[in-house]
Image (tube, rainbow, N blue to C red; front, side):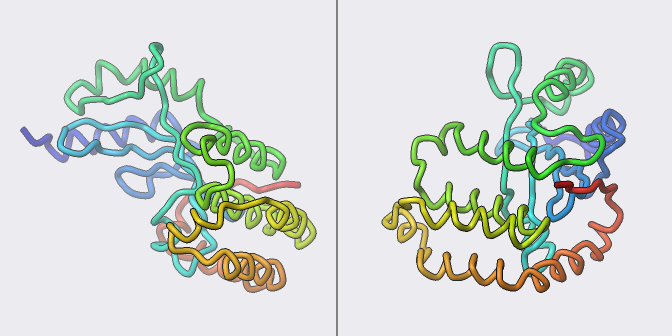
Length: 227
């Protein structure tokens, strides 16, 4: 039986009250802005069930528009219960399970929701995530490359030199060209686009500021990305 919309609304409200540092962007996203990204929690409804699963998410806000930026997260990380399994929370049992789930989320969240975030913390987050399954099984895949692209652009937000340093690391990697092809990506063009972003930092920053003016993003609370 389908769960009433009011029940789902109550779920979102409970999460928002538990994390007042985050703003309800949509019914399933609670986010804040930090420099060139938004991050926070996403309550993903599981297919063919009336259950949801909380995830830690980081989205870029440097793409051509907000919708495109929010199509794919840089990081999507599930939370686990005390037995090591992912949560699958029936909407109808939310009130009973919420306290336990909330405790796990607070302990397992990868970045603090309070205060500013440093570039060092963001790099450590991405590097740590890149070493988790299934990403760790293919360290030179395009999926790994996309993650490193995220790291480059977060660094570029701080300065051209920080972005250039990450670009040089990317250029030294022995990427799996065949996996790029499977994903429909020309590695040469990909590298050229990264080089172009570093060369045109002003345009990159303008796009971020334009996206931050979109009404959904503009209402979010924000913190600074620091050196």
